[in-house]
Length: 409
Image 1 (cartoon, rainbow, N blue to C red):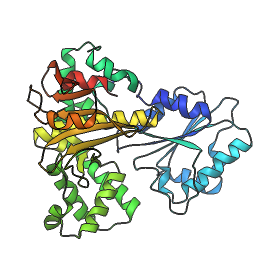
Image 2 (cartoon, one colour; image 1 turned 120 degrees about the horizontal axis):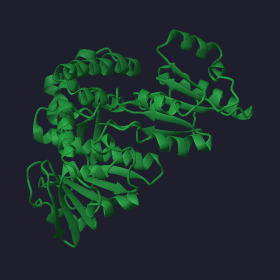
Image 3 (spheres, rainbow, N blue to C red; image 1 turned 90 degrees about the horizontal axis):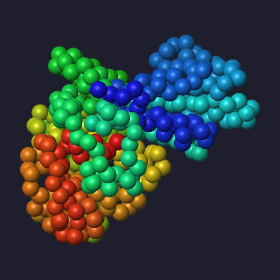
Image 4 (tube, one colour; image 1 turned 90 degrees about the vertical axis):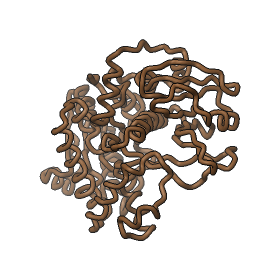
């Protein structure tokens, strides 16, 4: 289980480093950013790894930033981990990058962080044009087998033609993802006691360390309570006011806290798509967790697993220059819903409905498909299945997650 390279490795080498750009890699805590950095370093004769939590590096960074780059006749790789904790990191890094370029001293720079690297902007100069930003997702079903992915222009043909050969192991791996979540350590360990300790440690790191450093908030106990309530809210449009009685904080405060948790990759937001959709919701988003294993209800947990797979694909295709891919959902005021809609370059591309135990096409397809103009649609179930239907001049595939998710990143 799990390949020896991550899916972003070749993309970073080909799109960033070959074009003399820095590579910024952000993603959830413990999703494998440091491992990815080590995999990239293995391709270099000379490399250096620096972590902001290391006192000697902070001293070096403050006194002589350019000295982090080793002198070599080979292009070195310099990895800067969690450097965004320095309030002036962008200004300093800009100086290092521009000096290296002026001196014609080749060096590949990789910056990694567990928060969105564009939120640490106070007091810093812009690095626009000097880097490409990549979002690393946790492990998916496909990445357990291969780091290679389909191009967006090919993936739907491959999916609907059933180009991949299914194996019984895929069903076992799907069950492991549902039980232990998508993060490498607990998924590969598959030990319940280890998982519980790992999850508690991850919560403490995000809220007690990352959130404190990012926001300077002191009300951490209430934020921990908010985080504990979120698994029950997954899969439904979120009303912030519904959280107020338990948390005892104002609407604007809760909205701010949720935004911080999103920036720290604790959760992500899926907004409603309303263009050309009659009686559509326009404001209320649905929230999902990057670590969906802590969701007790099996239906929402399975839906969240699918959401992580789809968002990971959207982020990868966007970050690798294949287009602008965004994840939405469909819902009208009659409470009819399609769980997800992938939008490509501003146009509906693939609607995805999640029906954990339903083999038949959902009744809501007849409501939404004619409005979308998509020629293909996908309905994902938890158990093995593969059946094609003709639905409102579109091709509808009802398939088990163990096969269908193998076509995404």
